Image (tube, rainbow, N blue to C red):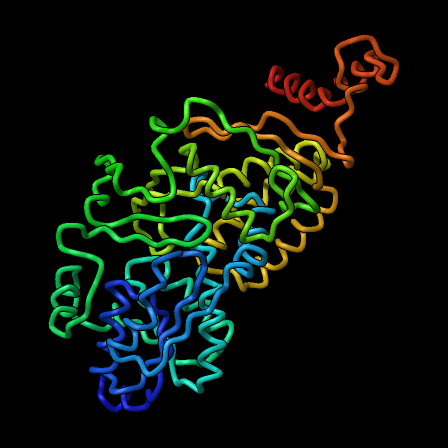
Length: 406
């Protein structure tokens, strides 16, 4: 990049985690652009990872470090809407990394406006999905803002070169050459990729996992839990009402103790390549199973089937970074309209990596034992089924007769 173009950037807001990539990026922006760097760290449930961020950012050269607690907003306004849609990407991935990016980008843009910054920057690589997710949000929320993506500019093309750069500037990093895989954690999940995980045949080592015990080491006695729902959102666990973030944290604890929520996936990235990722989503797995359970007795058949038809597209939009798009918002409105009566209680059994739905009840239930029973009853005339079947078979009979003639 020409120096003239770099000279116009006087202040940039960097999405900063304190990890290897963003620590190097912080220093690199100062060295290459000669600008002020304001660091922004979003607390979306990383836990202890955020403790050293402020001191580390200032030590590395940041002019200011923002740390914002976004946990309740994250769960209430991002995770819960996604769970109402039953969103699963490619049949396996519960979108834990994907769903955090639009919120982080939104907060970053807010700080950029407050600081009157010329640009925003992120640490996503030029091969991954996160660059798309961040930048689509930037363009939507602040059209025209300059975006700096160092991985697409610099010549630091490996973990080794980043570690060497960090050492050169005295930056402490948590990653070593012996343990090169990366991880990303939030309140919904933790992901692992890269390094030894790039071989899709290699089984992940047990000491890698952080949110869950292995199913083999989980308790020999099952854990039963009850989750109460109101209009598609969970509001209580075992009769205790909780805030969205507290509720998810409680389910992470219960699920993690029972080895629930591990996934080993090879997924299709938006940029065109396949990628292997390993995920832990204990609370999210429980909520996905529970929500389908309460829907099963409270949602009209055709509404449910229509929502199920929308789900793959909804999940794709979240995965690809189109959270703030008009089509996602339109789909959300349709999905939420179907959640009006999705209220009640579900009972689940957690046992050695499994999350099993074992009970559901609701004052809004559409399930009628009188209609469904195999015992004697007066509310359903079985003889009516003959006409129903004949009418549905008519087109099939006509097609069969035509095929026979030809």
